[in-house]
Image 1 (cartoon, each protein chain N blue to C red):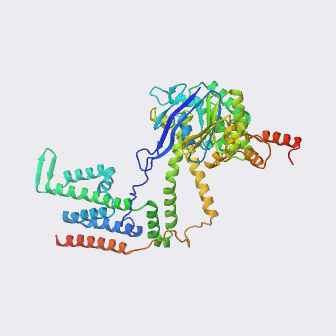
Image 2: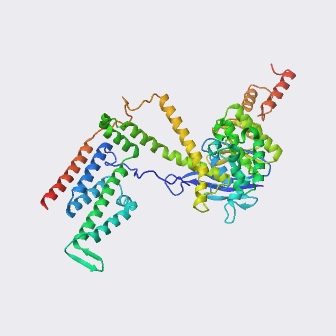
Length: 267
Length: 287
């Protein structure tokens, strides 16, 4: 019933990109976003497209998986395109009737902004497609560590993320079980109007919450009995190491950023 | 009400790389009034099997016939049917949700669309079946009871629908000896007094020895034995080969026999063994 839901969008294959250090991938993603914003012309976008395509080839991730990330955002992208198309002032008029006025400048800007959005989404999808959620939260923790100076709970945040991710399948399984148990008592989750359906959720949600709290209590007890006391002085099971491939990836990103800056100056 | 399972096969995650066959061509027939024990190692398909018996899972192939009618047929009211074939899941106390014990037990009968009077009557009946005092417990929150009491409330929630077949998946798992004894006594009474057909899944051979009058042994999604407990517990080799035990009394009996004592091969209840050992003692052959 609920067992077909896959968590996140991690694409579990092995590749050079998958094996990169999550910290490096996070930083490179941020640099990539900067590069997208710095690109001023379509030539710059061609460079970025080339970069994305190359990375997806290296990562063994099919290009259509990347495109799938755009789906939930297609409304926003289309809206951005239309707004820019109709409301940008320009001199070279292409079409004009009644209140609608489409200019060349408007079209260019519309295409530019919606492409920018698309690149942002595709670039960040590359990160989540090639990095497992656990590795990702590891990377986030280490990158946020300097913020501990200002009492930012970096370790706690990462631990919360990891635990939440760990328990999603467990809770799904639990939901499935409780649902079946209530169906065995004649509960009906599928028919009726909105109100009666909402009411039908009570026998599902109450036990689910109770069990989530119980699990949280048990987990806290288990962690304490194994002497967990926060991130202070804690060593890791998976020690993150920067390898040659990480430097190569940084180099590639630096070249991309450099070319984009150059393109901004020349063109 | 008879249940007939014919050539039932069930696969999880059909059509993906994770496809696993949980049940493989399972067939048997359950008559009215039987007390059936389903035993098997973890992952042998017991839980998957019982969820087919009231239509919560759909078979990949094969049929489940209730009184000769296909459970997954087009015109079958599965909701009504689930109320006649009550299923108590593993750790059923985790399904409790109401403010009071009485309200929680009333959930099933309410879904059946009964009148308020009838519901109240059913709640009393069900609490009586599971030996919970109505005056004492009806208005208490189910969440402040002990584990064993919570489980009995959950079982009462199914009994309140007055099913003619009751299926229980590991009803004694995780209970202390007293809680477990209470549940078993309750099932015994229910079977004797109300003639409810009972199908019980369990790991505990001693529970089975005490209650079941027929055993179905499962291993890796298939039925490997189906018969009287007496016959099945005598086959200790077969049981150990699929990772199961025999009741303590049956094991002791087998050990005594290998030492040359003249005991029948098919003893499995502590009382029977006691009588036989006493008989040998009196005859004086035991020395």
